[in-house]
Amino acid sequence: MSACANAIKYALAYWDFKLDQDYTPKDDYASFISNKIIGTQKFNIIWIKIREKIETQATTSKNQIVRSTEKYSYRQDAIYARHDSQARIHQHQI
Image (tube, rainbow, N blue to C red; front, side, top):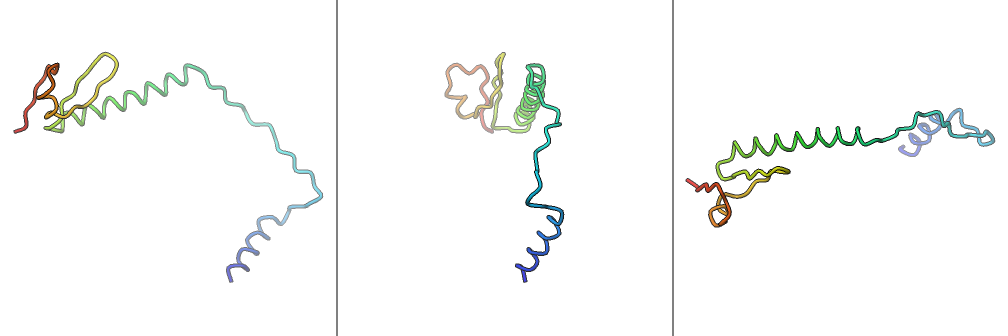
């Protein structure tokens, strides 16, 4: 049954296909030229979304603190921050 269904499907799909005809691909599509402005805009959009996600995760979690620098922010476990001698903010679990 399935073999007959496949044969009918391909017969309907390729009813106008001829072996002796020349099928050259069309090259009338507009080419996409990437430039630095487009790449920078996409990077900035993604970067803003990542920063917002990190900030919301930090405000909703009691066991996480956020360390910010000029270039990036990252989360650090509060238990590890207690043992870190360079940590400016110490948060203890309650």
